[in-house]
Length: 152
Image: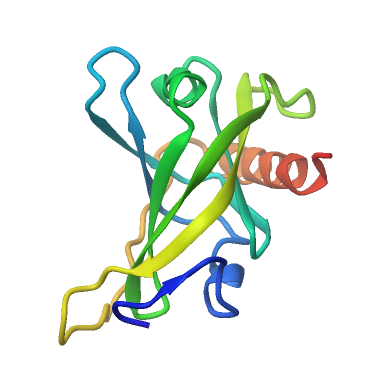
């Protein structure tokens, strides 16, 4: 898919974004007007046209999106690196079903690009581990994913 521009998630990308994974998001900082990049993990694509994610309600990401909705998320997977650009909207200031104060944001996808440099392939995807109580982390992850899936 190198140098191709798509307007939705491919059959390969959609399932990658239906499970928790390491993703970065770039927003426009509401104060400096410069780029702001963050790592996020609670990501879910309900369909090939949109991606949802949850972050702490106090996150700078939320205020950035309220001021400038154009965002880009970067996903490493399926042997490459993908840039997904779209317009984000805070759909819920608080996910009531989750014990943490998390906002729900939805991105309507404008374009998907394979941005891997020429002549290369990702041989190992990024991995991370939660550094707090594993059982509590797993429970919270399930609650957040379910709330993102069921949101209407």
